[in-house]
Image 1 (tube, helix red, strand yellow):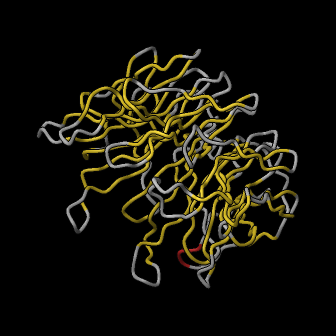
Image 2 (cartoon, rainbow, N blue to C red; image 1 turned 180 degrees about the vertical axis):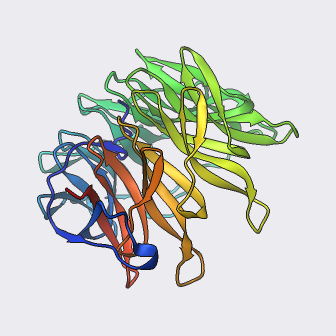
Length: 405
């Protein structure tokens, strides 16, 4: 299935200290155990039980209770975005190269895409510009992302292009007639999705982007839902693509709706009564998750969004944990969904306290926390979940949730 490697992962050998949540908002379901993995946020996990943890600009590979620093490309900071079952990690890292005078960047130093494997972080380079970013990879070690070129737009900002890195070379995937593009995901067939500029321009003269699928050396425009823009976020092994696309509402205003692209057509998944929705993940069974606005409004008159599961042609509201809002981020092959949701409790500042959840057997279960809020980022096909949680002292820790045996 399409992983969005941060989201769908494999079985895990447990290590560390199990922490039982108790009291008020930190009460987890009895059959879930939360394990504290130390400072940071767990962003990815694979079938070998390896976990990528981000902490204060550094990235670590956690295995059997120990952390290994993955290093950097010359300076202090690195970010990881995906991990495959071979233990390869991709992301971006700060280099010792300074940005060119014409490059408008907040940082003095260039950031380059990397591939980490065999205890070595490899600089994947750029497409002629200063920066690049790797966001996904498949089991063959083919890496996708986007990289800067030498060209500039009308604002003198470097133009980025989607890339595929394989066999030691970075390939520019092109555009849909415009100047820029970005890749967001790749499946095991090597099919790539993302967003690319078209020839069309908006009222301000800026290029309009469409979701694309790249297959067999060609980029295909997936279109929109009647509005100008779209973007693809995930693809499964059947070649089904999900994302969001602009659609015209009855009032004539511009809204964005979740879509699934299959059999050459883009289908509007709708909303939960509100104006907007977004699809972020899909499994090989064609089940889609994301968020969608409901009819309910908050104090500012904005529609409140809920996590959804779309299957068999219908969008299902997954609800909340007693509060008002929720958001789904991943689904595994058994249809288990994870994300975060408001509880009925408030934090110290009076804001809704978010907790990680798992939705299964037609029910949303609170995964609890280490004393504050929590969020889930990845789930495997055995139902093991990783993410982050704040402690009672408000420190953020990487965590692992497992079923109590």
